[in-house]
Image 1 (tube, one colour):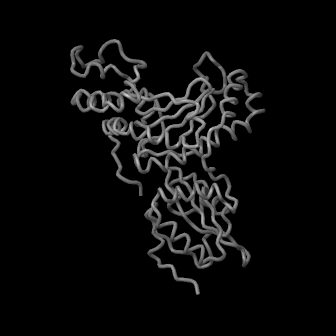
Image 2: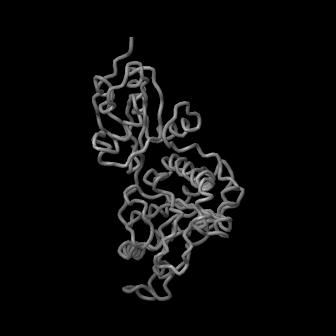
Image 3: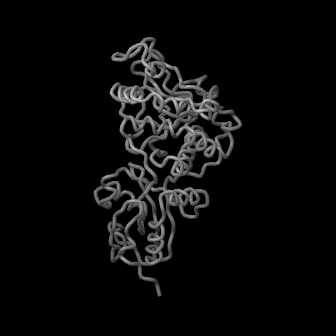
Amino acid sequence: MSAIVPRSAFRDRETGHQRQPAVNGERGTGNVKRGTPWYVYILRCADGSLYTGVARDPERRLAEHNGKRGAAYTRARRPVRLVYLEGAPDRSSALRREWAIKQLHRTEKLELIMARAHHRTTKAPGPVERFTAISPAALRFLTGLKRRNTKPWFEANRAVYETEVRNPLKALVEEVDVLLAAVAPEIVGDPRRSIFRINRDVRFSRDKSPYKTNAACWFYHRDAGRAVGGESHGGAGFYFHFSPTEILLGGGIWMPQRDTLNLIRERIADNPGAFEAIVLAPGVKRRFGSLDEESMLKRMPRGYSEDHPAARWLRHQSFTVGRELTRRELHAPRLPRILARDFAALTPLVRWLNAAIGFPVIERRV
């Protein structure tokens, strides 16, 4: 006899919501013939959270979650996408498995998703594949794109871009996100939002080449969003970038909006020693060098004297540090761990900057 699943079991550790199992299967799955197998699924919501449910027709249920008949939790977090699918012989088995998954912490769920993507036996629409490596073919594609940066050439080679560049980068983001949960839980990566578009914005540029010749991704504070640069309200985070001529990682905040920059400068001015203790720490200097001096002011910003104790820092308009990687590191299967290790070393700087802006440290993901 199947075990009874208690109502309290339907409170998800990830969402905090409780739902009552439907009497005749999950609401919205329609009239499905008896004997149709059941599925347990996990959705990734637009805010990065994970939602677990059961259904007989996962594709139809996914459409409902993105439409008007989804769960209350997902309605406020659309669009959602299917990242995990697991078959079950009957409804009772599906509900028991759903309950077990809901008891997992976020990191454990992400590990489950990645493992299933690698060894899946049921077909899920578009799950992120497990990271294996960024192959030399990715650099060959970017080299070719640099030589023939045109829409016809790109479209003729789009399949290579998806297979060798975008898909491995999506898998990398997913795996690094799992590792960041133990390093800096407030910094997240999302395969849909972390990867920079390959299309260039050419509206105000003399160079009308339609595509970038690099691939990059950004890991950001979950309360700040993924925006970067002076027209955004984004926070500090971690960055990874590769091209045929440059492979690098970094951390910090690049060319923030004026109000954000003022908040950072005010905190530096109030306590220069605390900032210097981070950026001049022996481990940081030895591995990453000094703050990038891109776009530094030649004179002190308005309101600060030339002999201010923090003068060397107040002239910065960006606060980033990083290092170049070798091609051997780029092509290594352990690249996610390489990034996570260096991101851990940069976490004190990123957290200091985010605290100045008003984004808090989070001890653990829930």
